[in-house]
Amino acid sequence: MARSRARRHLTRILTCALAALGAVPAAVLAGSSPAAADTAAFRGVNWARLGDNFHGGPLVLHGLSNSDSYATVLAKADTIYTGFQRNLGANTVRLPINTYTVGTTWWAAYTGAIDAATAKGFKVVLSYWDDGVAASGGRIVNTSAFNNMWNTVVTRYGTNDLVYFEPMNEPGGHSAADWANVVNNWLNARPSIPRARVFVSGAGLNTDIKSMCADRRLDGTILSLHHYTFFSGAKTYDQWVTFLRDAIGSCADRTVLDEFGAPMDTGLNYHDATSTDNFVRYFRATTAVLRELRIGSIYWPGLGGKVTAGQSDDWYAMQKLHGTGTNLTLSTPNASGLDRLRYAWGLTDGGVPDRVSLLRNLGTGQCLDIPGATTANIQVQVYPCGNTAAQRWTVTAGGQLTALAGQRCLDAYNRGTANGTVVGTYACNGGDNQRWTIGGDGTIRGVQSGLCLDVNTTTLKVQLWACWGGDNQKWQVQNA
Image 1 (cartoon, helix red, strand yellow):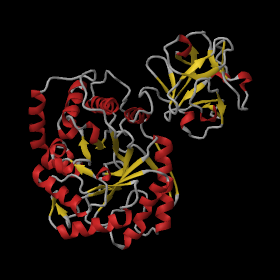
Image 2 (cartoon, rainbow, N blue to C red):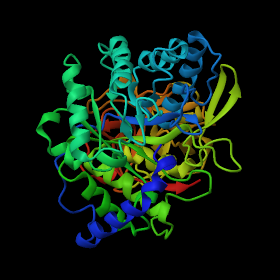
Image 3 (cartoon, one colour):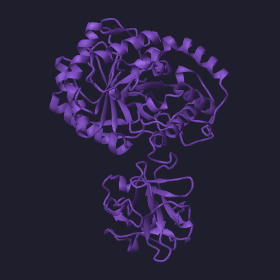
Image 4 (cartoon, rainbow, N blue to C red):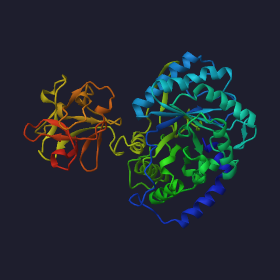
């Protein structure tokens, strides 16, 4: 992560950033946007080594041990990715490599972390981190070591369409022109790798992507941007919006923000739109821009990272690790932070924490109800509100609507995506047909179908239907 080196460059970066900020008027999200992005399919987190990935030794990720076999790494990684998938909705992981890891005894085991991810359908971004051998001070110093490492990686994963390659994380020792030459040489040496599977770091600390975007030799690649509060100082919400949009420029359609993060251990409320806390303003603005421009993102860190005084890992960590051996579980330290991350990914509305609620239909004045409070699979209805067990719904951080103490999930039957699809209760299985977004306009939309939760005003049964703005499709979330 950038923080281990960023302080050395902070004064220079801060001066440049503030100068740029003064030249740009404050913008709001309603303003004109860069071209629509096609990177929103990247919903990821970084899995890091404790103590950060800038390390002159093998990269043993948090939860792994340097004595682990390939089979053990595979099993541990599968459990951790299951946590990322279930708790966050992630489908991407960014993993570090270096010359002490690739082609060594540890590489034989470490590949289990890559293979476990692709086996689950995860995208994997492999990024080289300065290790003092192939690179030092953010600059490639041993081209032979650099190329040998990457040749080993590409030989193994070059034909796997789920694996992406980032030649170097934070090439801060190179000028923009020099770094573009390094990347161009990397591409030319590996013509079999599709450019759409190469992440080109922004010059400096992955901060200048516009120079890379303008270099026609790099066309077709993905641009990797990093964005932290300590890069540029405190700002208002609107200034954070402006700053990030300016950093992206007209390159949104190629950009993935593959590092950004904020404290998740200090009780900050990322739902608070009126907060004057710089981290809250930054994180809310960042997630809003990502969502608006449909830019994919990879949060730092999902797990691991710098060890913070008084903690066992990074205070930015989105997940906390529990257990030993292969018996591992993950938990979420800040539900509001997770909500905002999922908001950036387009999975939730970003403002609904887990809570038990009544869902009152505006058109009928009645509440979403399970007939007879049965645990059998049954089509739901609306019924006069009575705050009964059959009407108490938990809106989870994962986007599910559960009832009867979590025994049943609201489900679009048979994964239907057509008007009239029956909506009922079913055993919770994590499918997209059981995930819903509650919009600010009062609609409840199926994640899989995009259709609205709709009341048939004749039968009072609930179904999916194309959203049209009627009151029978509007719902009020009321405390139970």
